[in-house]
Image 1: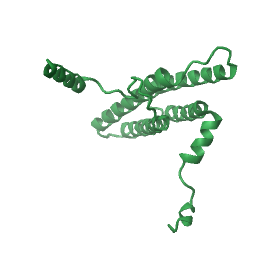
Image 2: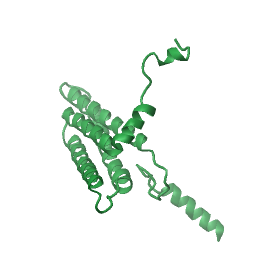
Image 3: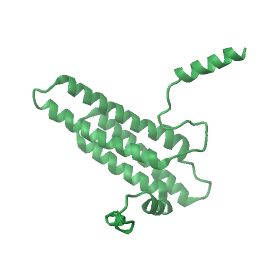
Image 4: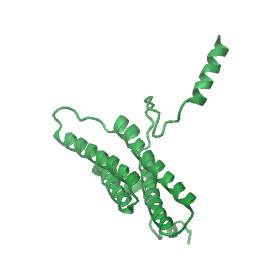
Length: 174
């Protein structure tokens, strides 16, 4: 009997679709910065994809390459939307406690920004205008700032930004 259960569990693990944003168990293990980094990477890929589609479509280029860039653009826009839905809306953006006006304002701002990003990602799918990806990136940066708040943004500046030039001098690097 245990052998059958083990085989069934193994089959379920192999056949189960992978979670894009996180497990939703809840396991309590979150990496908000990693999610924002991946979302930013999706924005960059969407912009590059749109530019490549426009470039390849303007000449007698390889139709196969145009199709591949279109598929790439669709995939990254969908992943962007899924991360917002599965990670941020489902798990990280919490409804405020009753009577906390500041938390409610921040909550509504975050919901509005997420909605705007989902719609803008849809626009990235629908068009080849690279400006949509640029606007999406701007919305993402506004959301990141709102999501982390002042305290979180100070922490990010201290601990998650690249070292300034000359920092290696103190360690004897240059």
